[in-house]
Image 1 (cartoon, rainbow, N blue to C red):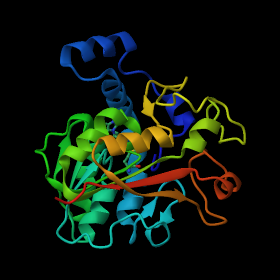
Image 2: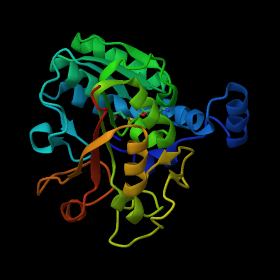
Image 3: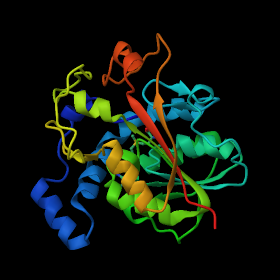
Image 4: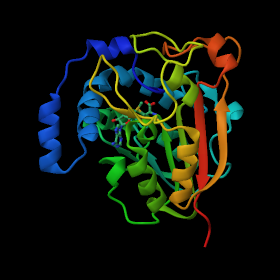
Length: 284
Ligand SMILES: C[S@@+](CC[C@H](N)C(=O)[O-])C[C@H]1O[C@@H](n2cnc3c(N)ncnc32)[C@H](O)[C@@H]1O
């Protein structure tokens, strides 16, 4: 979404571009995981509805994060000094996070699985006169050499649409010693309390088991998301040689609004609706 994902209504309006058996066959032939193909088809279809939100975020003077647009000054997500840092945005969509990084003096590259999302990112680069490399690939197999970047970042990109057991080792591989991995996801609590029904916000009831949480599919579209519980995420980051530095639980200000029907402000004031992980590859 401009945060997590499009509304359930937007999803329901979509048609399947790749039938599941066709996606399975293509996956076998191309050796691309089936969920990557399914998510590519869905994001190519959803891209049009991300043009205006992308424009708004490219236009923002300061970074604003997640579904509530929490200002960077409150959220504290970005490293203090980005000047001259090589950054990769994994699942960059329309590329506004990379644009924010570039304006802070970093050298970003955006990688995304959807050609249509990257086409919007290119249009926005032209419109704002700000260029950085855009790469069409899956973050589970990023076409870069080991130790290329100082920062790998994802806001609702690879962080929820890729298999964590594939993209997090890949992000760790891409980082230089001392480099940082920062990613924003839907909170564990949100994933456990969100009903299956379209446009229904998170509830105060646990609607699905915590144990075993990993791969999520919804009844109304063909996409695949991944969400891990905190213990599994900690073990995975550590196994990838990363040191966990923080887990931010984002809390919107009273009266904040969102176009996403994922949670009410009353809910999000009581429980974290979004989480940001920060981890670092140790220096040599
Ligand atoms: C919600 S957008 C994230 C970008 C932006 N922060 C935003 O919120 O609009 C999700 C992006 O993840 C991308 N994505 C999905 N699967 C991916 C994969 N395997 N590798 C890289 N990007 C992927 C989608 O194509 C989409 O552009």
